[in-house]
Image (cartoon, rainbow, N blue to C red; front, side):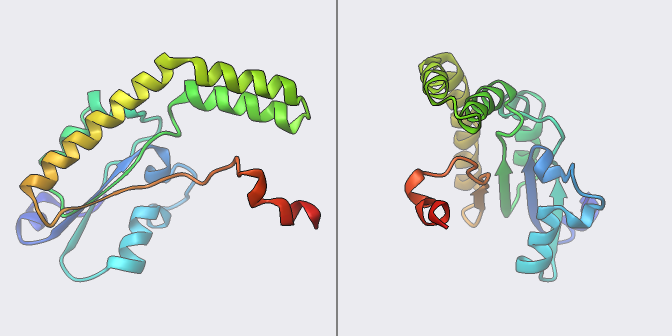
Length: 172
């Protein structure tokens, strides 16, 4: 979605929203409800902004690199770039979910063992770190070429709060 290349060439400031199904609005019924459109409308709407939402359902950090998302973002020469990736890195997400399910089932020793296995699986973290390093290095190149570029790496809510963060809620 967004405007045409002709409109961008006519002077739009370019906002590129990159990411996975959250950026793409998989759970939304209308494109106008997706967060990039809401961000533009609610906070940065001013004449001259063109939004290119290139979020894709199922996009992982690896497929963002190999599938052309990163190159596309670079080629669009954005003034503002948001990147939200991680939810679709299924191997890590599924492992963490299985550990959290043990906590919810009060199998704390199983959850501890599960967490240790995840932390000990260095190849998972090495691959993820490599992908994010590549993405962030590319955005550094983009920023060097476009000094006014603003890059925002959007995070997901933490479903696993620190116990000290919820003590008051537990008491009530």
